[in-house]
Image (cartoon, rainbow, N blue to C red; front, top):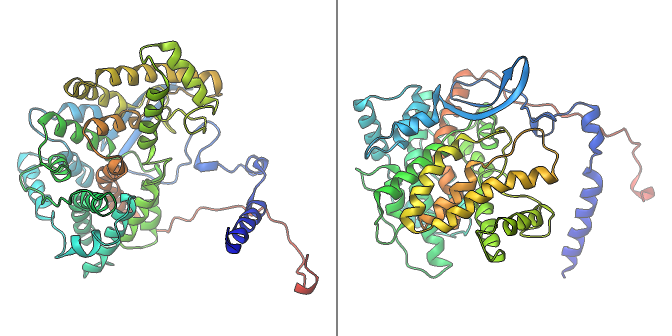
Length: 449
């Protein structure tokens, strides 16, 4: 070990000693850790028209857990998904709703799709000079770098007028699939020695169709595959102003920063395993369960292994059953509920019935196992991450692309919140921190120990 590495270990120990706070102080000063109180209620930091989450209702004056609801601009997201009839894809329609506050008619939707198609283009040689240089196995880092580099090509980068920000947001919504997929192919070629594919988007195709077409070597996909991916994008598109990456969007916007910096900050938040990277942990956990439980239909064996995971004796030894529970929802996550029926259709089409049965069993057993071990103040249910990773695996989407797909959807919500913050912003967001360090007397360096 290098001497500098020894020093760094020592310095890290100093950091731990200097920065460790007594947990009792948070209660003493009534500090809401994570901006949530001990009952899980979020500290209200703003107002929004864009979306709403329901997880409790008042019954005889008592706050009572209820089935989860997610509303986009006042519309139940489940009803929106039901409205995607026939061969219609919902991503573009719901993006219009979130950005402009109303559902489009046929002419407005066609016009918006044409605008997105017009913007599905990157600067000359951008793919070669930016995406293919220094490719990373972390496609979120590649995506963030691409977004920041796009700022160099925008003559009006720092213009925060609504007209200019809307142009920038629509452009990013349009090119996110390209930046993500090309970033993956560059990594897969240079680091995994696989063939390079750069398929150009097709104007007439939807966002979901283009994503699958650009990702696959043969450009082929089924209508069911594209429909399920489209629904996944819609369900991940927005989730209230309080989620970490959207709050980051609001905070950085309030400082007056440019759109590219704001989106880069949001991407950096989303890539964390406690946020957008959660579905990767679900897939890894499920692979571990499948490897260690010989009979997937044996409920007792599956339950016992879930207990081992909770007891930190199995999988990553963190004591977490991934994909279960949510910071807001209690009895159910509506996104998981609406997603599950489409997941089952895809599982049947892909011959993955056995896998789906295991997922369904764990969805039922995990809350029971968690309740045995943990003291919980609200219900525990499957969240959208529990099934989304399974869907992506059935769509043959590589693991490295899971979180970027989340970003491809969530850029719409970030854009809507950025614009809303700009329109209503009058102060920089600046929360308070209470200092608990006492005063100390300065000592000359000669007498310090």
